[in-house]
Image 1: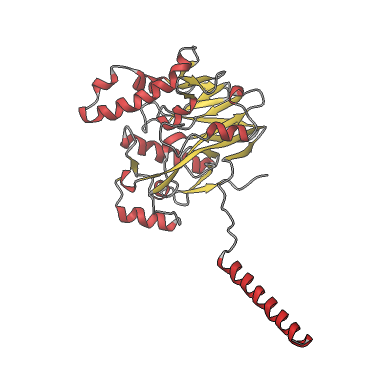
Image 2: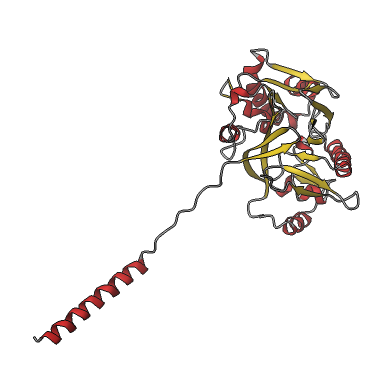
Length: 326
């Protein structure tokens, strides 16, 4: 074989090897892994204070639990908001940590493990935000449903060992009174008993150390004015807080959906103890908050659950999420 033929063979072999490598690369493309969402906390400045929204988790509600509204109307509203309907109506569970400069006040606490594996991130997100549970000195509960109270303890141990827990006197009397069960219709008793047991377990470590107290509507605790927003539960409360010239209202569960119940605020939800009163409370508070323009913090609106309520006609409302602040 002459020199020319040897060079030709070498070139052909090299080309063949290159093609094989290219085919091999095409058959096994490099896979780039996806990653989880970043930690669920958001720092919101209010006057001289800092509010940290803490995500406990998200879940999906059946459209059927929204009362007095046709299924077709629910679908129309969700489409208008580009809300994913594949799993139901998405809802968040949020808690709010207020750094007053002299103390840390936690408004609601999330559901921990009471409502399943999608929840229980409040403490993790609090630590990621730079705070420790031991620093919290006050916990204000809008009401005692498990998705607001269960986060305060784990298996009989207080998650916030230096905090005093507060809820309304009317709320405590309803859920913690052993005689309340017998006052309810038979068909409501199993559900009530299940909820009440979770509440009692969550509160027990604080009660045993005399760190559970009640308030009345109109009281002021740590600068938080207690407002009567009963209906969703018999002793439901909201909290108004001011710093400098700014004001925010922690509204609790007067609303559960940023789409359905803003478009149709007369729509009750299955969790309401008194549906008629819950709707009356929502309509009154929506009108007041839209007129006055103060910021709102809501545990079940899309994280971070802070924003404003807007109305063009006083009948239909819109949720305006907070604009990002750095």
